[in-house]
Length: 99
Image (cartoon, rainbow, N blue to C red; front, side):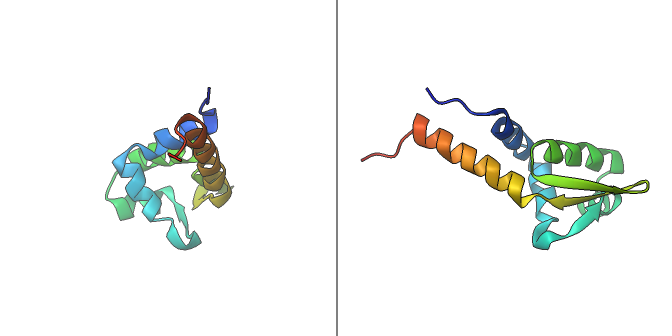
């Protein structure tokens, strides 16, 4: 029996929210953004943006680096690819395509 790994569970949970899906669009083109920049672009409070970014980071969709007091976020292609590979394996085992 196929089991979905923790990485993929967190990945799916992070993408389950419409706001988080919209926030991910801001990271296209390998752009790096601060919480304040994300909040401004999305029209949400910084605290709300911070919560969403933390969930996206936990889900393996973003990486973060600190420079002094500022945290910069960027899409994590390796984390995204790993989760998608795991999901594909899971779906192939649990729900194989018809022959």
